[in-house]
Image (tube, rainbow, N blue to C red; front, side):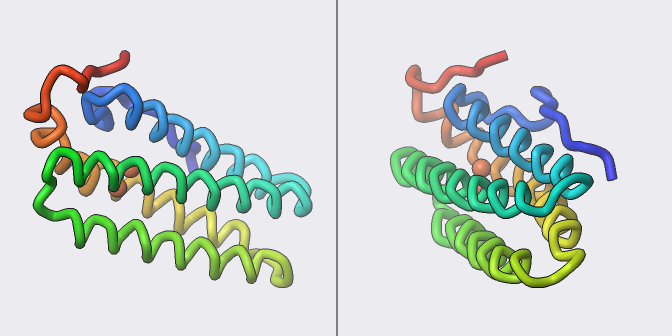
Length: 138
Ligand SMILES: [Fe+2]
Ligand SMILES: [Fe+2]
């Protein structure tokens, strides 16, 4: 499994803050990737950081969706909520079962790639229409 990397053309939402958060999310996923190949104690810590960061990122993104009047807010938020539920389920299992961390890595990598490319991209026209506060970082 390859580590994910940021692809500005493919992934940018044209919003510097959200883009930076997505980059950070990818970095944490890659930390998990490295950790899966290393010690187990480390994994517990990274899973907690991933959950904390997912909560923080989803909250910001949901606030921006409300600010720009994104019409699919509820269905988008429910995807965030179910991702968090899934992460918490994995977190409980990581403590006591072998091999769960690589299962979690596969789940989150697939989820994040799909979500960034298919779901978060739907925000682009609404963020763009919202005006001058929105600008892209390279
Ligand atoms: Fe999202
Ligand atoms: Fe996002």
